[in-house]
Length: 307
Image 1: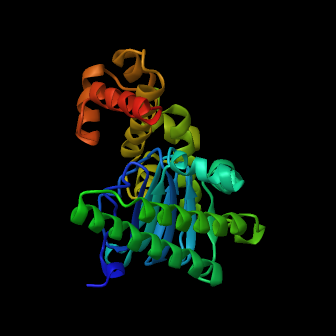
Image 2: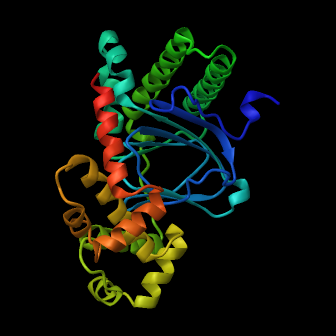
């Protein structure tokens, strides 16, 4: 089987710094939840019908669209037909590249991820879109080669890792140049349903740390409760309360890492959970470990990164 026909490319060796998924089709991977992560992400939409929710903004994707994400902002695809939904993704740690970028004098290539507020670039699959697709393919192949080398020799191939870095730098340079061109930035044209869904998500962003009332939300937005719930599910793919809990979970993850001395009770209260017991159960169900273990893991990772 050709490497690029494989449904998933992911380096076990570089998984702390970089992962690559090339032309993944359907929903083999559990990425449909509203989620966030610390790595920057390059998302390339290949085909199908999909709305993409980035915090409180909704985009109708077209083949060749590129989304640049800082990772920490909640995001989620909502494909209409799972069987035709095809995309490529690269997640990478900016810290992993920082020294190389500084030596090359091009640290500014990361500015689109930092300053453009999780933007969408529309290529129409033109030459620039084909360039990005080709680079993502090459990165995926090299990551597979690194895995195979590690399995064969038991050692990491430093030269292959250097090749991956240089390939990623070339991709970032191309994206940086694209991001400077105003015509590539999508000017959204929304339907009334999409506009209402964005208004709902904006309202939730402002109120998720409180006791959420669908009646109050509907009244504030001058919508019926049934209509608000129905169109939000239709446009985004999940319910109002699923969105609320996704916002709370993201806030909790942030507080557990950035406020290491804050008690779990205070963390849960600050994120809008009714009780620390409910917060702990929900967190373990969604993340797979307890909040305390998550906080400790992040503390260990920070120590390792500073050695």
